Length: 377
Ligand SMILES: Nc1ncnc2c1ncn2[C@@H]1O[C@H](COP(=O)(O)OP(=O)(O)OP(=O)(O)O)[C@@H](O)[C@H]1O
Ligand SMILES: [Mg+2]
Image 1 (cartoon, rainbow, N blue to C red):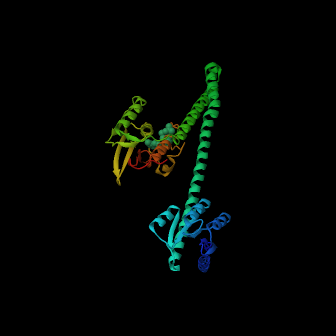
Image 2: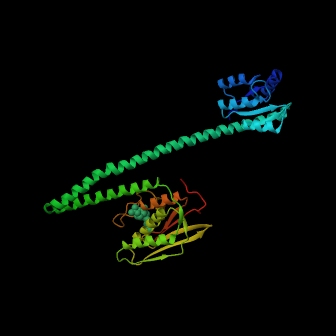
Image 3: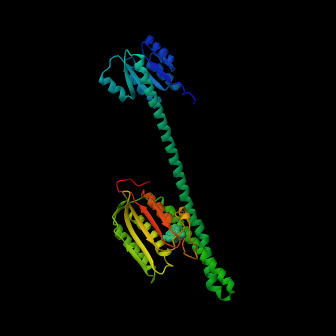
């Protein structure tokens, strides 16, 4: 390991012999020292080169130690200062600290007293510098993130506008083809035309879903107490309307109140229940359970179904955007629902996970942090 660089100490004392003696003694202890008998001269030196520590006498004609320290810290805010005083009093100590002094030592002092004070002050300076460096990095990262976010917004904008326009043309012209020329078309041409129309609509859906997903990251969270039971009942009512005469047995257990953004939490339950309904559509007796349990002191909401299930080998893929474990011919979908669920739960500071078995159903569980914990940005 490389030896740390020698610390540079600026020593100021109007009594020249004392100043020189201190310079020499500290030099013997591997410090680099430069001495002056006036504050003005010290300030000139400080503006020209960097020092790690200022060790200054308090009482000096002209500029005293406190004034010197103030001026020095304007030149280098991370400089650490120690005052030396013969007339120690609480009032001077307080004033010295206010001026930014880290410590003060009473004269006449012994070397064994001053050395630990110096090394403590230098350690403090290192911490301050590291802190400043970290803050600088955080600022840089934040700025980079802001730029990335802006780019993403610009990207979403161009997706919605640039891609939607040609898509509308494809959709519109194929509808005209269908309406005005269908009768003269060979069967195969008609089938191909249908595929063009279906694909164009599907692409429109993908674009809408992608935009919905990217918008979620920017929308502010409005957290408040939410009556989970009412919310789930409302979602179930909406979903049932879309099921026709399907017979689905839904069991809703006791659900405690939770705290979060009501419309986003509604979206979570909607997407999970919509999946439960969809992936049980091939079962004769579809069953869906919605419940809440305590696990290691943590509340867990869960939605369980006895539907198509999935192979646990691919469980990591489920929550990715556009990731699907079932083909469109089996179950329709764009593969965005669960990624939206995950994003919302994470933004509330919670976790979401899935368990399933091929052909034997699936269970999706999530936690929401207790109300007193802050949500993640
Ligand atoms: N209840 C479930 N049972 C079995 N598999 C599921 C269940 N829920 C989700 N999956 C699997 O996870 C994949 C991703 O789900 P997700 O909800 O994100 O997309 P989707 O349902 O395919 O489409 P959509 O964007 O319309 O919701 C699904 O394609 C399916 O393979
Ligand atoms: Mg879905």
